[in-house]
Image (tube, rainbow, N blue to C red; front, side):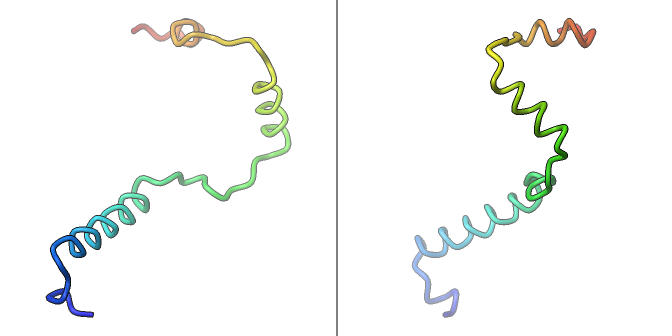
Length: 67
């Protein structure tokens, strides 16, 4: 297939797909596919099961951050 054979809509879709792919490469999750350590997995599971929630302000205060 030649680019000259594409309709404007097909060319736009092709370019859009290429840009999306490149952005995913550049901005994607660098940890994607990596394994979690058992301790991290257990802490995450415990955290997700907890009903305790903190606001953004509470987290900032605990970390000594000022908005």
